[in-house]
Image 1 (cartoon, rainbow, N blue to C red):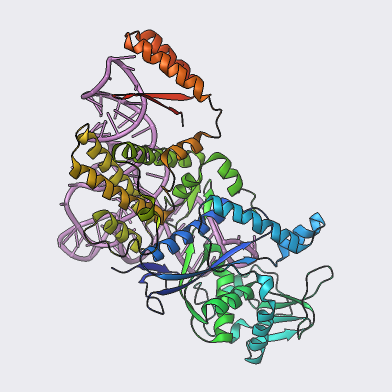
Image 2 (cartoon, rainbow, N blue to C red; image 1 turned 90 degrees about the vertical axis):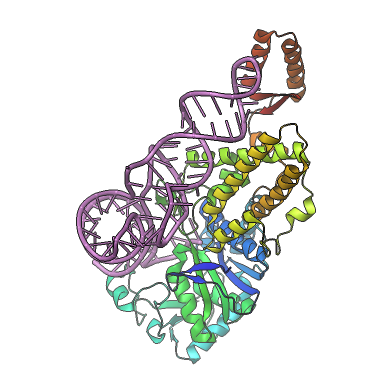
Amino acid sequence: MTIKLYNTATRRKEVFRPLNDKKVGLYVCGVTVYDLCHIGHARSAIVFDVLVRYLRARGFDVTYVRNFTDLDDKIINRANELGKKPMEIAEHYIDEFYKDMERLSILKPDKEPRATQYVEGMIQMIATLIEKGFAYVEGQDVFYSVEKFNGYGQLSGRRLEDMKAGSRIAVNERKRHPMDFVLWKGAKPGEPQWPSPWGPGRPGWHLECSVMSSHFLGPTFDIHGGGKDLLFPHHENERAQSIAANGGEFARYWVHNGFVTIDSEKMSKSLGNFLTIRDALKEYHPEVLRLFLLSKHYRHPLDFSRNAVSDVQSGLVRIYRTLQRLNTLVGKPTTQSETSLYGSLSDTKDHPLLEQFTNLMDDDLNTPGAIGLIFETVKDMNRTMDKLGDKTGTRDREKLVTEREHLLRCGNVLGILAEEPETFFQELSSSKPEADPEEIESLVAERARARARKDWATADAIRNRLREMGVILEDGPKGTTWRYEI
RNA sequence: GGCGGCAUAGCCAAGUGGCUAAGGCAGCGGUCUGCAAAACCGUUAUUCACCGGUUCGAAUCCGGUUGCCGCCUCCA
């Protein structure tokens, strides 16, 4: 079986064949650190997190690079507003970004370069572009000449002629073509600046990704990712300058994730209709958010609504209830075999669940299909457990243990089902007012006595009282268990 | 204006040429239970926005219509 990825550059699903056998170079455009991230950023981070996890599970040796844009107008503006240095702003929001990523169980990339660390390289790249005739100096600034690059527009599927006419950009007279973009901006007072052959200034935005990707992955690498909105102009420009300066193909597969929308409108800083990861995590468990963000195919828009997220939560609760039931029936999983990711899906023969999961994920990361499969598996496990009852059929038990092991492997690729069920339930209800466990226990005991003498009225009264306290009772053959209402 | 995407049940969402259109949530009926809860079983789309066409056969391909959205300006 082979992995297929939709390549934006060709607008087709293509069989994924890395440049070097089992090695994969992946570069993803990260965030501009001037504010807290919203769940649109979370989606992008999670999508590529799952891509990396999946590739590793399939035995690929992935080098994952994700940058920080710590040099940008918005950072400078924010710094000026707050009377701080741009670097302070960037540092602060990088820290905040890490907090969000950690809570969402997003694996750290192998390399996380920052734009400001690569200004030297960018200056060199500009010099090369000038030397090769792809760039021109205009006063203090340097521009890239899109007409000099043959394949300009190829990636995003645009033609220069079309863009010239309908351009909404206020045309800068110093540009030779309206689509030319700035490689070097002459310094303005109060802005960060670096010395350069063209005078002090700072590099244009697109340059950083060109320089950092080739620094870590070379002039030709496997996958370049980012949000759909980066396709044009950012990725188009990155590609144009990289190929012009370094030769090679630049990225061979382009993977773009769709947006998170609210009321079907794109969530964005400029529209003000965004929900920060921070705020979302106040309301929802990280795994609920992960599952929600993976519940629709990564290329399609995903509409955020509280109803949709809580529906997903109900489903995840069901999965965890099954895992809890398994724990009591066959014991807890041995952590070792179930948490390692690398190669966990390299041999799926005779393992129907793993094989089906792999088939779905191979097809351009069909996470919604894969989630459906997980639910089918859960139903099947519950069925088996219902049938098993008190019997000690070892074959069924073994089957359950194996199936759970496989289920957790799949969960691991999606970055879910990593919690102890008890912990998960506790964390889910932690935001709600909690009743005192001792009080609950004593009420449960009191109710047990009432039930023993068949005093159903008292028993039900106690159960109702507990329910008002947010506690749900479950009577079983081995006594009554309780849980907080979710 | 240019380019592109989407439209599948009450809601969310897979499926992109061929067995009975996955799965989740919600609802209803049942099993279990003193009653519940949880779980399970059954049930909820003769039909995939609409109209034509291609085909033995289409939700899936082609053309058109309508509606929604995105990119073309910083943006995951």
